[in-house]
Image (cartoon, rainbow, N blue to C red; front, side, top):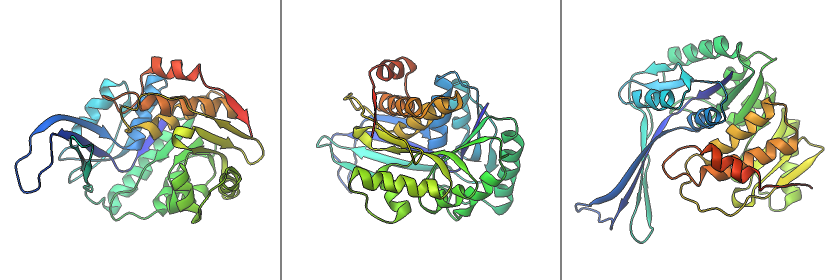
Amino acid sequence: MILTVCLNPIIDVNMEVDSLNVGKANRIISKKTFYTGNAINISIGLAHLNAQVFATGFMYEDNGTQFEHELHREGVSYRFVWSKGRVGENYKIVDRRSMLTELSDASTEITEAKQNDLIKLISKYSAKCEGVVVSGSLPKGMTADYYGKILSAVPSSVTKIVDADGERLVQALKFGVKLVKPNLDELERTLKRKLKSREDMLDGCRKIIDMGAEYVLLSLGKQGAIITDGTKNYHCKSINVAMNSTIGAGGGMVACATHALLKGGALQDILRCGVAGGTAAVTSPDSISFVKSKYEEILSSLSVEEI
């Protein structure tokens, strides 16, 4: 079983309007609502690969029940720590000129007692798992060392996968992490320097390995991804696909890379599966994850080169 930890769920509301007129009534042409959060997306991606998944994390009483409905529909087991308040909602409004307007909300703060409750749940369930995936931002008011508290509650025999950046990643790495998946911006923020060349990027990945990671999977967007263990380095270029959604791309990459890793895949396999999962996710406009058949189609067309 794979345990996923979602610390900051979010509701994404995507709306299309003819034109956005401030101070006037605006007619919505289309509207899509996604119950998301990177670890939620990872859970669903793993379920699409027929993995046994258990989702935990924080959830909110006022508007959080739909997350359970979505996970149940996808065949993901779950148990959340429920708190008073609301899941934050992000609104993305696109008009006919393709101008994007975003309105970002924040979830309610989590009490210290609820934070401790989640650590206890993670300790209980991770002992039964082969892998634990921790991903995403923290709720308002929480500090980065909570990532360290989570991983310190996971047995050393359990494979740890982390998708985070900055101080959250730094804190996680103190407890030994098998795989981390930053994108280039996140790696630069974590190291606090620009990485312009491929050698710069590989050097940055090696810094993360020196801090406690075993493998670094560096997402490069349309350019695919790089993976390294500090000695062997590989690149996989993505393929051109119709980009119908950006929601879930990172989660798709982590889900498929995690699945390959826990199946005993070599670095090249982890990389190729991760790139296929992230690419497949952007082709699915009505889902926060990928369609398995599309993932398999893309996977069969990818190749890996040593660098």
